[in-house]
Image 1 (cartoon, rainbow, N blue to C red):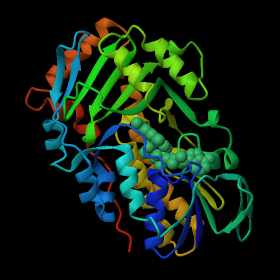
Image 2 (cartoon, helix red, strand yellow; image 1 turned 135 degrees about the vertical axis):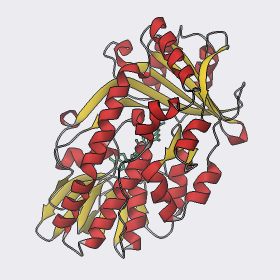
Image 3 (cartoon, rainbow, N blue to C red; image 1 turned 90 degrees about the horizontal axis):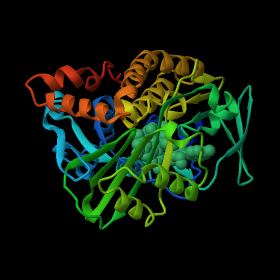
Length: 393
Ligand SMILES: Cc1cc2nc3c(=O)[nH]c(=O)nc-3n(C[C@H](O)[C@H](O)[C@H](O)COP(=O)(O)OP(=O)(O)OC[C@H]3O[C@@H](n4cnc5c(N)ncnc54)[C@H](O)[C@@H]3O)c2cc1C
């Protein structure tokens, strides 16, 4: 089948890989002029890790990844006030875990299809006409494409979802935070292989040193601090971040200055997408577009890869019966994803403490992680994926 995929991110490129392997003809339509390689460092384990293994990209992902040693919380003056060793988490996953920058993971996935799958960069879908025999999509660049199926893999603010299922606010669950990510070169100090975190009331700043002298920064704040402002465009985002983090202490001034040296600033709400159905006729959604779990789940990328793998597998298994394929895809994944969403939602209330006392309490809790068995008790459940990855021929 000819299958159009809107969005060449984590889910879209993974889907294209598996569809092509099953003998289909995917075409990716990506709004950005080139592959988007931004994003923070994330822990990569569980079912997503296994999908990467089946794609043969795991050695490259591990090589691009980092063996993080510690999560370290620092006070205003840079003193270590809490933290824990990451070894305990690696043990819980029996070593099947790495920490990798989102952009590096996206690049490795895309490398597996580059030159083999047609990708239309700098374009997007402006209209969808579904009929009995297929779907005609109208591209913003002017042309049209006739395909058998259309899959929306275009992220939290999916265009396909909006065109085919309804407006964003009907499906988005805001978890109460905003976050920004950017990368710079030459920042010091570095603290190699340590997630460095500083918290101030309802704000949190993290940095992680990458190879080649680069550093990633993650700024998170409670949405109430924005006083209803929804910034559009980079200048407004920067102005808002400067206001909100102005008195956050520690290295904040230097980090805000570093922000001005980069063009690539990613900013969004920490949200989930919850939909009554991920499919409608010949159209289905995958990844954040359908089932965003938010970064509080810690494995959005892995789950997006898993969704793509299952969707492609069910399309292959149903041998042309797309209704059966979409139904099986949804039935298999939905309970697992809803569990992940619930866990992330529960975590949201304590993720960035709102008061100094809350920060102190969180710091005490992280100290417990050093006790034997505590990591398993506190994180074992969220680190174990209660989902058996199907084998598809
Ligand atoms: C640049 C970037 C940085 C990110 N940083 C983080 C981070 O630091 N932490 C975190 O938890 N999550 C981050 N995310 C989101 C994270 O990648 C997803 O939560 C997760 O990996 C699920 O992947 P996805 O493929 O569904 O969505 P995404 O990875 O968001 O990919 C969606 C793709 O669709 C494209 N797209 C969007 N709209 C359209 C359109 N109208 N037409 C065509 N293409 C479109 C986007 O450019 C992107 O390539 C980031 C996403 C991006 C794009």
